[in-house]
Length: 296
Image (cartoon, rainbow, N blue to C red; front, side, top):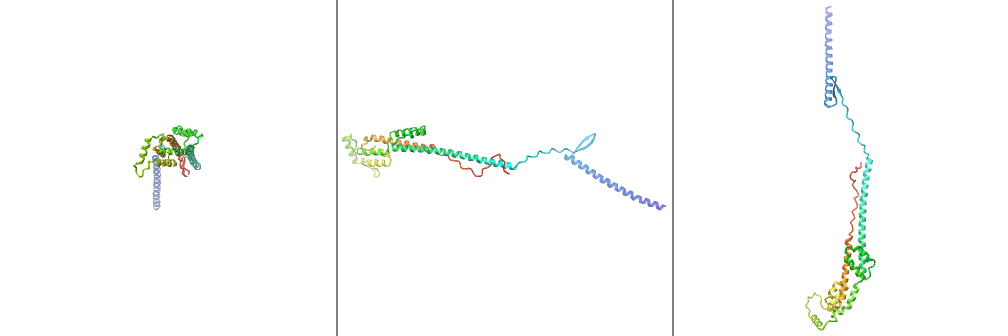
């Protein structure tokens, strides 16, 4: 009997020891779970993921509501954007081309006006040199040059009404040549004698032209043949019979004044309508205008 009791007591002791160990492990696991939950709650509160609110003295964990999502960005239509950029480029090219055409039209208009003015001046010179009346040229001269070259216009118009041509001057000179070389018909004996004596002794350089009246007549004739009326007048004024050529000298001076007036009109025609330089064509690659989106 005693041995039986002893064996039962010995068996009960290990059972009690195993139960205590199981309860200890369970308590340890529960403690770890509680510690993990507390740590997670603390981290959530610290980072703002959770909030604590007191209700009746009892804290409650409240999750903050998420902020409303931002409105969706407008979807950009790449095809429409590319078409808009291409349209802006074409508009810029058309504007550039229109500016070029306008500048070319201005240049053509200026050149045409300049050409017409030059032709008018040339027509006036041709009519005067031929001894013909100006006709319609007179009104055009007053319209185009009257305000800026009034004196020259009056001189040319006067020459058109009373023309003096180079052939007329040459012909009149040939008629006066004997009198120019021989002296005036009213020349007295003493005057003729002094002139003859002065012609006998002449001191001059070898390269200087001869002052003899016959040589002066030849030089004046050559000057007239070359259209150098001013040089011919200078020779006639040094001849013995220059008094007989007073009318010829007046006509020659009128001719020279008319030529200067024609030169003045031609110079004014050249300077008045200066050609307008056309702008160069635009490059093949025209940059897109500012404000237009780049093509995607």
